Image 1: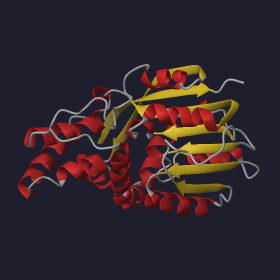
Image 2: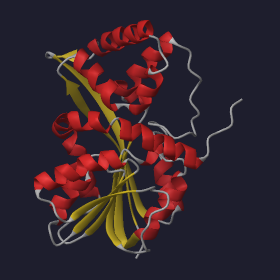
Image 3: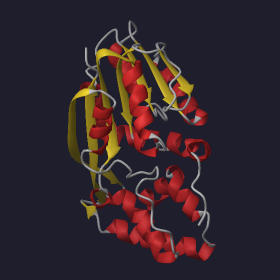
Image 4: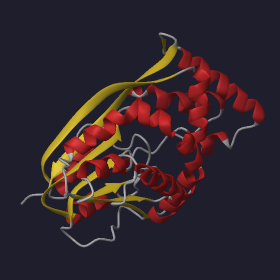
Length: 286
């Protein structure tokens, strides 16, 4: 049995993966803005952002929800967006420049070792980041440490795979073509925090209070099954890693299986997928 990778090895692998797909994320950026902006607004609301605040956004990628956060706090406030992947942040910086947001900065770094003093941020946000971390309790402790007393953190992580078929379809198709080892439920991954109460419990252990959790149901759609497949191959680093192991014939087989499965979600001329996101917010005690 192969030895488990260290936390540092996991982080380095993820840094390489997300840098590799940064171009894909930039290409599909308008799609994500159109389809999933509501999540950014929900996080900004749950973190109680308002003018003049100093905000930390963790796992900003190409700027979600950091850019909306910067627009909300205004030029008298400030936002720092952190992510492992420098090339994802380059995309975010270009967007910030286009929007004229001079009070937002993006820096590469590891969320489990924040380079900030204690009690400095008025709020923190994080969208689809925490489940990928090898040491989530450590990250929760770090978030609690850097927040000012009374400040809120608002996070979004994916809920159960069966409620997010757009994510599960590809893995199911690949599994039909090659044998994959069963996933380690404790390993970093897209559904690592899908279970009800898990992230909420980690926030409580970190000393945060007024913890709220909601499974937030929504939909997103694509023009066609082919468009869905193309976006998946260009932005989903974990899927890319698996596809790289396949022969050309196997790749064609997987493509056919994925587009066929996606076609089952056709509605009104589009492919419409349900989605379920676990929204967890908490406050640092005064």
